[in-house]
Image (cartoon, rainbow, N blue to C red):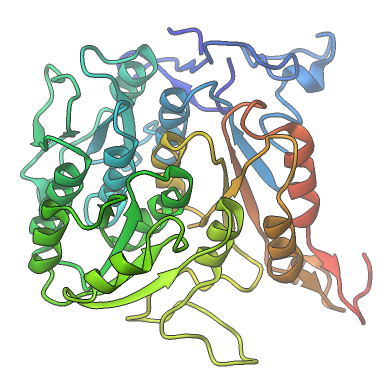
Length: 409
């Protein structure tokens, strides 16, 4: 097995059967979470050796990879435990590490009907973590994708012994457009909604990955000089879709917004920095939520519309764009949570803190905490991405608390 130490408490074996082995991280960045095997009561610092509080707290779980390749492997096995019938994925997406844009665009492959988590690879050979995870996942083959077990995106290796489909493109724009065509063909029609992200400002594009995995809305890219031809052609294929531009005018200029108006209705979702941009995307809905009323996603609306507790949240470091693709399967399953960004591993950004305080902290009344709704936070990456102090703060913010009139139990 590769030496990658305590990604998450997930098990991976070489062939999908027998006694599973633990995925480990390539650099042991913490003494709190070795997680190399069973821990006995006589083991020194037994609680820390079990992985607490790094791998998990009562309201959070960490995918403890030192790099996005390891994170993607950990997430895939967490989402698809592959240890009992019905728990294997039908297909896995294999996305390139040399194109964060293609990897983020590939997140849409996690949406129905494919439900394909993203694994990552360079061009020449599968990384050990990816190869081990793929062997353990043992995808069964997607009927929606012609029986493909692996969907290869861009410049990634051929996987021997598995039925594959390939999505090709010469640059990030053509690759994203090709992914869009593939998804449209699988779904039988193009999506009515399209997300436009910047190909040159990855931190502002990252929140699109989780939404694509949940919604099936494709991600297309624009550049600093406008709309590339591949993106134009893709938009034409959607026949006047609703177009949502993710990021402020400093990232995607108003002139580009105006040009996009030729291809459909255009609205912008943005924030002044990556953290606020992710928060505003997490709360956004079109059509807008009525003032003073509860906000929720409804059929035919666009956006997470998460302005109430009882949800999942995925924390990513803005400097690791490939982690957005690696973590996308968590947004398209389980707690279905939006991506929220930190820019400094040791600090929870004020916009994210305010969001949790305003919308995420559950309360309970005289019925007690067992009648409350609950949150869950995923920390993506090791402590160089999201520190344990931030994880502990998030754990506290996601905890159910008594409201006025509650019994305080």
